[in-house]
Image 1 (spheres, rainbow, N blue to C red):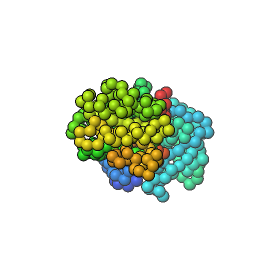
Image 2: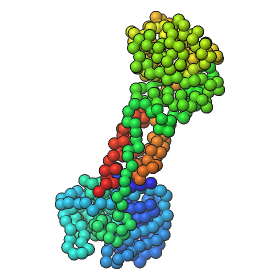
Image 3: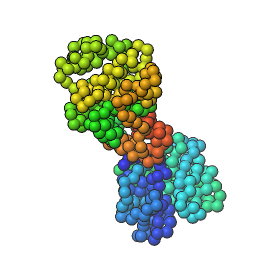
Image 4: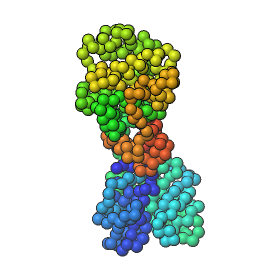
Length: 423
């Protein structure tokens, strides 16, 4: 896992003899930061994180004049916070701790007033009631979304007079290993942001739909891929072409034709013949030309909606149907459209559209949550950046799992994290 902007998920409750004693927060894998006075001279220490208890295995207190301690804990993978000493006058600072009256946790907002004097200066806070139980809590700058200090003490337990906190500059002085090194952050892995995915290693998911398509094709039928615009139909056609050699029981040479680029009937036949490496021929001679080529094809027609335009005739679809019937037919079809084919081609004059009659529908919907999570993890694997569970939930709510929208949301979020990693 990695650093996160969602600092609240990194907060832990520190217990002594299984009784709440203060707060801490993850600053690295298996490492939590807190105040020295929360745990000093105590031996039976544990932390509560996301409802589970974890044992503290080591305590580091390198300087007894500074109220900081570093705890090593047995815990599963988790995110940890960004640390940053950037804070200016009157900025709003947020924290989350475990006061006596709210042992399950309570948020608190304060205002930065300045620094105290001396070599071990503290952050002075106002306009918030710091109570026992907040000691060791992360102090988060609302502007930078990073932790700028560690809550240390109150100015008055009974009134909202604020408190004091250890600044991050002192954290880094005591624990220099926590200061982030400036790394070169890799370029954004969430590409391409638009258009179809042609490279097999960039295609993701749709395993269930791919299995279904090849089951249909191997049964002798053709397929209609139905889904809303930009849901990934073009990329899916390319993936079918890529897997056809290994998945088809009877090999057919894949031919991808984007109907969006075609002008009329003559253009359709000329482009089709060019892609199949057969002589350019008219519609009436296509069957004979295919027979002479002694090849069979998996014809993938993208944006088949274009064939409903007035420049294209009913004849094209009738001929595609005729050339796709039977086990040894020259063609098996996979066509992509935004609506059912019988709705798309009303020119059948009361008859069922020829393509609808031979194509079994396979619907492409948005990605499920598990696919979005897997997609994000795979794309981020070679980077130091990680998205939190809350990030994933927000992406799902924002995009409803629509692949192109997921890609764009992830692209924008990665850039945000990348900017936060830079000095």
